[in-house]
Length: 202
Image (tube, rainbow, N blue to C red; front, side):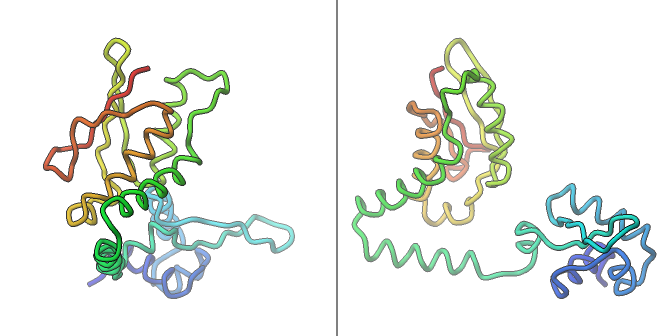
């Protein structure tokens, strides 16, 4: 039997968008309970809301699934991605495949690269830890002397990397470009370590 939370998520998947009143009617609970569940689902990043314009009075919101929420449902992405990478490895040389992942890492890094904005390296690193949550990373860092070690507790493509470790080149390139200095890797989840870790010199 599905929980209320699952019913709300399934309804949003089927309806695409719905108000609290609509969800209450479909799921079969009162609006207060629906609102409580939606608050939790929004906090988890599974649901988003948008204000509906309908004249005067209190604003009314419609709710929909985020990309993260949609990913909660069964999909064939992992199998498809592995098949695509299998074919790339058959079609490309090792150097060409490496260059392919490097280009992806460079593209992702462009959005987060540290800029000469007057902000300290530490300030930009703290902002990066928060910004990369949306990419699936969970970063923390510590400093010893002029060396900063960054730890990642969640690899966003862990399941793929277990079969295709070459994909880690995306991370290596991305962080090298973001920091504008070499990132020396010391641990990797794919190799059985509890988290990925690399260091940079401030």
